[in-house]
Length: 114
Image (cartoon, rainbow, N blue to C red; front, side, top):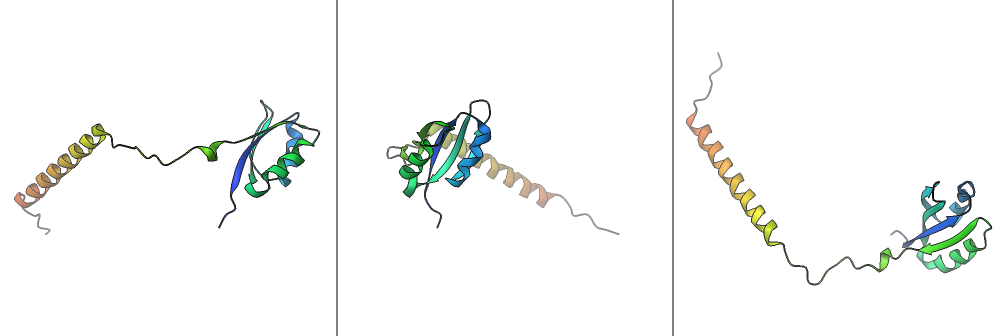
């Protein structure tokens, strides 16, 4: 199973030196215009890794990602009535189309090859 990783944004003085951050985790994106590196770090070692990266001369600021704190399952999720109605309409249209196609096939004579 994969190790749990957390996202980190590392603001740097120069993006050329940002390649040195590879030893601390997986680099996802390097912004040359805004001078930051988006990367993933092992969750078990994140505090130690951040302390080590802050000591580097080219790092100005480090921000943790809060994405893992956002809930993805909702307790009071109600189905959308409009979508349910649309699905029922589509289903009835498809059934009607299938019925007309089957009746048309039954009425037309089959072609005989010579």
